[in-house]
Length: 244
Image (cartoon, rainbow, N blue to C red; front, side):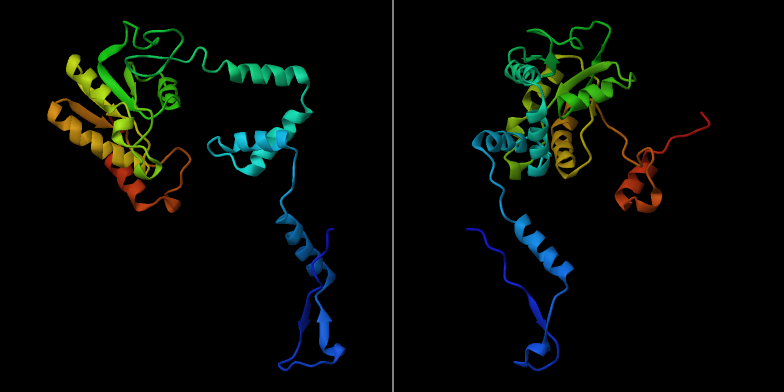
């Protein structure tokens, strides 16, 4: 049997008084607010089929329970044919999940990906990225014509990601077995990314090859007023000459 929380009263005055006139109930709007908070913290019970799907969506990066619930409720309203197609696409996700044995990018076939097999690419440059989508973003700029190497993440011990779990040894093997002249470190400028860069720098410097880093600085649309000192320092170091 459900019940409502007891009415809340406030006593005015420094001394307690048993007289009922000394007690004033909190305004009705405040009482209603407390009721909303009370019910907000009560877990809503869904059927197992819905709860299980919500939990599955919650496992995706950056997806909280509220967003997962919106996904599920959206799918519930879809036609069965759409849901079957959605489920079929998920089930086939790994059927053609080929990985390039050289750079570890996605490949449309077993064997080398389109970039590694392209004879027009510069074979002396390797751009090191964390994930596949980073490679695609750089490729979309149309400004880089070398090769890539996908690490598969960045060093993050608290999350159980150590250097041994990344494709670092494979990168060293590529450099030693090929005439690589430049390694471009295109990792994200966060704590884990910077730590991975320091680790790679220690390994790569003895190989006597050119080692470069993507310029750090103010993003397009950024505001100097809100930029931190590190970002501004990197922007100054990476400044470009305009009268070339």
